[in-house]
Every structure is written in C-alpha cells, then in structure tokens.
Length: 298
Image 1 (tube, one colour):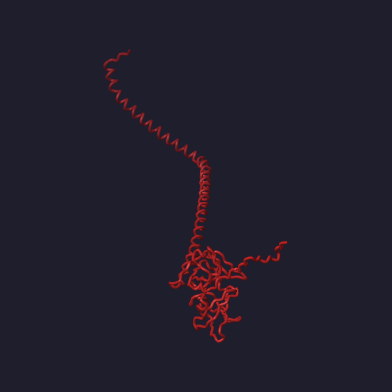
Image 2 (spheres, rainbow, N blue to C red):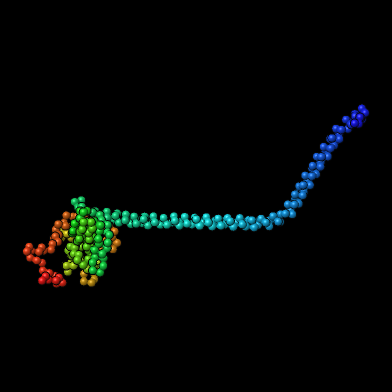
C-alpha cells in the first residue's frame, strides 16, 4: 500500500472538489449534446419516412372510408325498411280514418231531416244494392227484431229514399222511388198541384196524372202529399229537372247510388197497407192436384 506524505494528502484534498465539479459540468454538457443529436436524428428519420407513411396511410384511409360507406348503406337500408313499414301503417290508419270520416259525414247527414216527435225511427246500414235494369232496391241490416215493419219510410238527411217492401227478422228490402213499382203521392210545393211520382227504373222518376193546366217550372220542389196514408205530408222528394219527354222528370234530392246509412221511420201509417195475401189452404179431405211433371199414382 502506497503511503502519501502529509503534503501530498493535503494537495489531493484541495484538488478533488474542483475536479468533481468539472466532471459534473462535462457530463451535463455531454448529455445536452446527445439530446440535440437524438432530436436531429429523429427529425431526419421522420422527414425520410413521411412519404412512405403517407403512401401507406392512403389505402388504410380508403379502406376506412369504404367500411364507413358500407355501414352507411346498411344503416340506410334498415332505415328505409323501417320507414316503409311505418308508411304502410300510416296508410292503413289513413284508410281507416277516411272510412270513419265518410261514415260520420253520412250519419251527420241523417240529422238534417228530423222526424216528428211522435215518430219512431231506426238507423240502418245499407248492406247490398240491388240496382239493375229491372229493379231498384236496397238491402239494410235491420229487420222486425229492430221494430221495423213493411211500408215504413226510408229517408236520409236530404229527403225520401223509398219504403220497406220486404222485412225479415234481421234484414229488410227498401223499394227505391225510382223503381218501376214505386208510386208516391206528391205535390208541387209552390203551386200545390197534386200528382203521382212514378218510377220507371231510370235515374229520374216521372210526374204522372198531373193536371194539364198545372204550372210546372224547372227547379220546383216536390214533396209528399200525405194522400193514401202511406207517407206523411211534407217529406222532400226532389226537384223538377226536365219538362220534356212525356212529362216532368224529377231529380231526387238523395244520390241513391251512394247511400251508406238510412233512417227507417215509423209514422204510424204502415198499418194502412193491406197485408200480404197468404196462399190458399188445401181443403180438408181433398188432395192437391199433382203438378204437370209429377207422376200420377196408379
């Protein structure tokens, strides 16, 4: 082991701190220089690789864009299906709303012509239209179970439609005023001239048995006269629409081809109608004569 003299030991102790300080400064400077060098190298490397990274990123971006577009197409398809289903539901509700609005309008129309307080009535719906070349009738969904009877008047809010001719337990048939078998006693409201409104299966019935001196003008209002005890007086029927062709033609106030609901009114006059004649009973002890195609017993 080397033994230092006291003078050498003192000299080492005096020079050691300054050397350590210098070494620390040198290390710090070297670290700064390395950091600057590393930053410079990183910047250069980034500049060199930027074209490559730009080239590589374009396909990746294109793929991402394509994926987003495909996703958007699927989302639009799903949204389109949802909107189509919703549109179908809305159309269904629209049809229901239009149907209800039409029925409501027709039912409100029945309130325009209010029967007298003593008269009773039943509101019925038209379930069949038997209009054709030889018959003009309607079938309704009300019958004797609802209190209606043969001969009662069928009206709407605009005026007279006809009368009941056949009544079952749950359905009935209305003879329209345009039918060939329809005969309705009427008067011309202004001049009070009496006539019979007779149908001939055309759209406009004719005024029959009108006085030759009667003053009839286009637009004259025709109402029931009450004669014959079938209809009460004053029910609106139609207006004079034509004066040519063998007698005045009447345009009914009611559009007979577009009736949805009717009011069957009992004015207490249907009892005046004759009852249907029942078939004659076979006399007791006598056998009915066989038909022509029925074989005779031997």
